[in-house]
Image 1 (cartoon, rainbow, N blue to C red):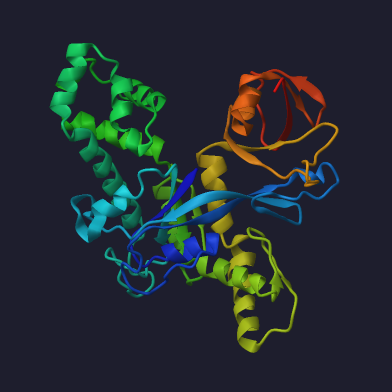
Image 2 (spheres, rainbow, N blue to C red):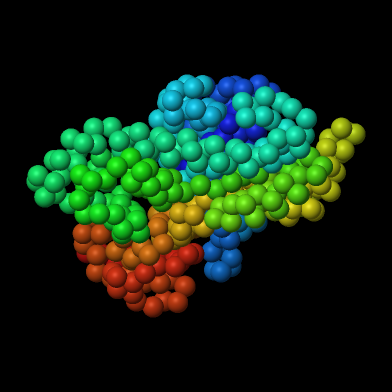
Length: 396
């Protein structure tokens, strides 16, 4: 799974990425501080099942804090996109190409309206952040459209002459964007286009491009810079204007400050929570900064929003679930680590899917599975639930 972090320059995109991953990236107050994409590990947060078993887990990857399990996910921060990116403006073609393998996009916007369309600093609340949502939709749609349009006449004739399956052929043509055949089938059914593919004009191709972009690159809005006075009106207006998007208020700077303070043992902080505990004596500047975050971010919005954005991307948009491997009689692995692994799977995954996820041999030699929480035997077609603990029985 790959989460792509996108947006125009200077909106706090790289700050969001660093706050999510603690990766060393350049953060600067000017457009195009990021040129090459940055890749690092972020984490989704779940309530760990170790609490159900009255024990403490020992994760092999990620970590567990106060019975909150943090599961690693790959994240990528691409350079800022500007209007006209699909035409190559601001090295836009290269930056769009970096997004090909992303499963979901986090669009970081400056909800305070303190950066113009080019990413240049301006007075707070003087720019409409709704324009950023609209412009990125256009750039992504045009990106898909251009790929779809390239060589379309030859492609359409070939399909017609060979009587090929349209959805299969389109999925193959757009496979570089991680478009799946089922997604193409659903889009074509929704649009009710003529079966005569030769008759499709640019308007039809644009409709297909838009719909495929929505399903293959679902997007969540991280409304950043919520610490600026007066942003609540912008936030409310955006939610009314774009009801189809999940829009989460966010302060990437605050999250980064809390994580850095935690890393230096100044505070105890669990990402995504609405509080922290001071562990050591602070200087006046540190005390003032943490008080500002507590009063203006955590108390007002419930969290900094960064963790919520990541979680919503994975669980609300992609509809993934978290499943643990474990044994009815033993939750530990051969080295004594309790519940060492936790996997993210698409909703609707079966016990057999999970077996294959663990190891190909487990899937090929699957006999049955056991729900460790209920101790009930389940078959290979049994659909798993979020936070299930499953033991796979195979003859391997």
